[in-house]
Image (cartoon, rainbow, N blue to C red):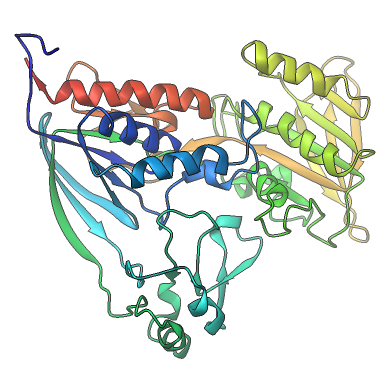
Length: 425
């Protein structure tokens, strides 16, 4: 029942970012009756969660949660989805924002049935960003099997080429349209939730850890894709240099995090991500030796603490409290030697392994590209919520480092804050 002193005003909510936080915000607002515009820069929804092999708390594959949310979005007429879209400007104030959007062409319209004929006709291969450049994809591609919207994408790289024409001619439904152009639209909204998410910290900046210099050093997000059934190796964890099964793997925690030269804060998720990935390795290689070099283990809450204790009880998992100072590679067999000082014993440790995984930190997307709105940021690029002024709010990892569960909880709260902006008192 509406209070006598409050009445809903006409207005809608824009959610910028279609990852798990954005999906939750949009659904929570729409399912209580508000019109929502969901804006995503990629050609698909799902964000970082879509790239994971499994996620906490139940170690489910992404399909477990995303499929349900995609169905809820599809069935809800109050949600309008814009993919390949960018916010160019935001004017106005709480309750009355004018937002300019740029809609980039997909070159595939709503007639697409995902038959795949355009992909078969295309010979050009491009870097697969979804798999962090570990493989190639065709110039006509479906981002991943359960991508939403369920529609192919034509890369701008083949538009105007013979391959583009082949892809267009191969489609019997008239879904490929190479004449599509970028266009701009304006939307009036009462509140905006920025769910712009995070990016893995650029590991090439951490020069002493060898990423980009040595073949068998990967990041934690690359490990997620290696372990995923729809990843570049169909789920088989293998050494990039020779496709061999690794007999030993080292995890280097706080790769760039808690470091004043890179990310001065703890990224919250990295410890649990590495512990989770240890289970991936153990499932495929029961006898593999796993070394985890850490500063401190962060396993918040009873459930995560139990998970940590289970991993620690594995006799083939060795925890070393010490920050890795350097790595080197054997030029012949491509093994990697990790050097660290054991903070407990004080001894210098040199451990040679087949493969190294860097637990790179979580950096807000806005740290590298400020959002086109009047927002406040902390020194690390996270958006500071101004609940007094209202109108615009940051959800999930745009606001602080968080796991999936925490992001969902936070997003529900930000949906409520956005709704309160639309209520006239």
